Every structure is written in C-alpha cells, then in structure tokens.
Image (cartoon, rainbow, N blue to C red; front, side, top):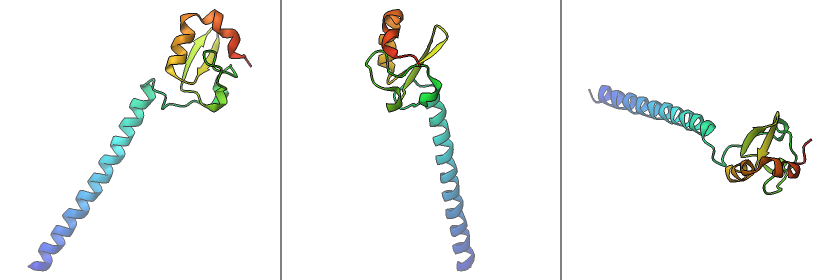
Length: 102
C-alpha cells in the first residue's frame, strides 16, 4: 500500500512540475506577444530594415540599436527610443537631414 501511495504522490509531483513548465512557456509567449505590440525600448530591429544611418533626433548610429521606427516619405526611419521618434514627428522635414539617409 505504501508503494502505491508513494508512486501516486511521485506521479502527481511530476505532473505538477510538467504543468508548471508548460505554464511558464505559455506565459513567456504571451509576454513576447505583448512586447511586439508595445513601443518600449526593449524592442530591437535590425539596422538593415531602415533607410537611415543615424537617429535623426539624437544622432546615435542605428547600428547601436533601434527601439522604434516610423514611415515618412516612403522611408523607414529608425530611432533609438520612442522619445526620439516622438521628437522627430514634431517636425519631420527639419529633422530628416540629420538621419543620414542611405
């Protein structure tokens, strides 16, 4: 009887651990989906998808990291952060020259 109870307890423990790992993976997936729609600086885009060499707001090279993008006059402009993007959008024509378009 003790063997049966021990086996049952061990099975329940393994099942609980397996469910916990499964929930952790689901949770991570859900977080990554949220991060893809979030505009936080945690996102990063490859420099190859943008048309500029430098962030037009702060001058940082896009190869250092792109946290946000904007489409302007058939160009994809990369920015190091949402704040730099917001600054650019206040006066895009004046800021475009600083972007060093490829």
